Amino acid sequence: MPAAAPPRHLALAAVAVVQLWLALHQLLAGATGHGGSGHLFNEGAAWNLAWGIGLLVAAVHAHRAAGLLPTLGGFVAALVTFSVNDLLDGTATTARVASHVPLVAGLLLLHLVARAHRNQPTPGAPARHDHDHGRRDDLDVAPRAGGRRRRPRHLRPTAHHRRAA
Image: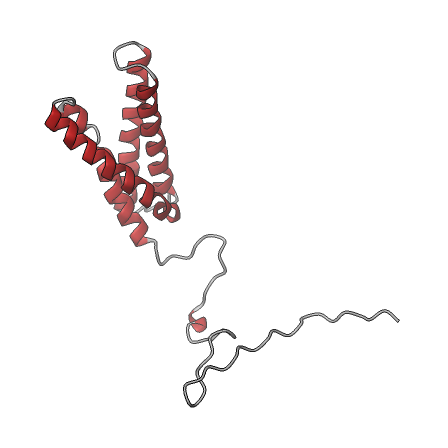
């Protein structure tokens, strides 16, 4: 992160740390026999750990935030749906469902970070300059009189080959 990171980046990093703490707590509680056990429990801990890492990466490298949005959005939508159902059925406690709040907050902050950086250049992409704004590419052709579009110009070779004698 830059020296003066925007508050949304700091908040996203804080949510990531909370998510990582929840995952580690879940793993340690399972290892000592005080939590759940089995494959499903391990899957849940792995997801929590992965989301914590992903949110932390997005907080540090904001250009990656938009890539996480569809997956985390789908995950949170499914998680909220199942959590509401589990609360209504009595198969989950309010405290257990409340442990998902950091993911919901992470999704909102991820959206804010991605939105703030959507007009920033992508690392590794060619830079665009202010004077490029009015320039037309060869394929961006204007219609001729009468409304017909003219064919794009063909590119000329940039190197000449010698012919064998």
